[in-house]
Length: 118
Image (cartoon, rainbow, N blue to C red; front, side):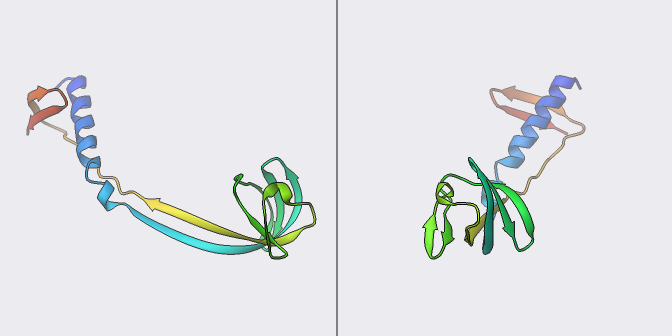
């Protein structure tokens, strides 16, 4: 069987395997609140002291921090401020199934469809 037919069979198998995956996806969400102290700010880069150590993080523009009961943006923070940040993490798990045809003959092909005989 030629290399082109092998590639076509592999592409078809991948598409067939991926077509049913959307229903098998699972999403989990977790939320945690962390205490912090601001050490330095440079644009969207923030250096903070956390309970587990000092970290440099990139903060999205719409992220809010709680300092003295007030919700503040990154631009409103100053070195030395201490507060809390609520972090929500969303994880999407997508299982992947691959079907490989190692030996077969293409019986018919038309547009995006092929019929394979083993």
